[in-house]
Length: 219
Ligand SMILES: [Zn+2]
Image (tube, rainbow, N blue to C red; front, side):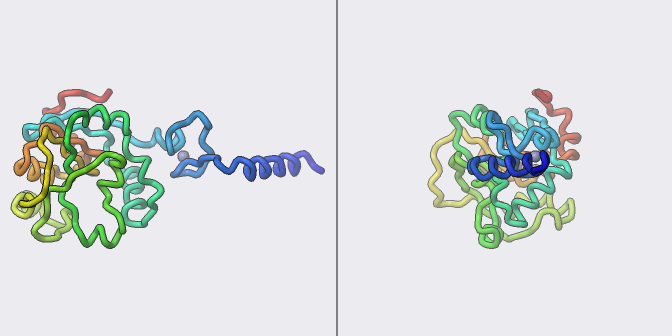
């Protein structure tokens, strides 16, 4: 038996025995046993970590990542192509636990049709196992990115607070996945003043526009 064949066989055997071998959710490379992450260090490195705090609209906003094409593709693959296994890779739970301590978590208004089409609620899935309340709703389903800038500024007119929704007393933390223009979140803040916001990713343009509001720089 050749050495390479022997090596291949032993590798196969090891893979067959090690049924609990964990693979990177993005590139499928085996993860080191001591790696507690769900993706490998190479893939993790491709995400642009911000971990910055901005003071905007009366609240402190924590921005975990920059919304770059790599993260955009991952979110698309997860949300729109149904790759549900990707959910755990987005949130840094240790960072989030610290930022959300002693706060009631509020999610942005979600569209019932989207949830039905996807079969899951994206915000709840990202922030699992944290409990999220959804006290807001949209009066009409509009896709933000398809709206003109002027229409996006009018968004506060179509976001409402549910009247009979049982919501515990604050302080509140508002969460979202991507902050593009921030108009949805500021509309929510107008309805329920949260003192903190946490977004998974901030659009580069939003980050640039709010550089004056930066209170804690990249850590
Ligand atoms: Zn990887």
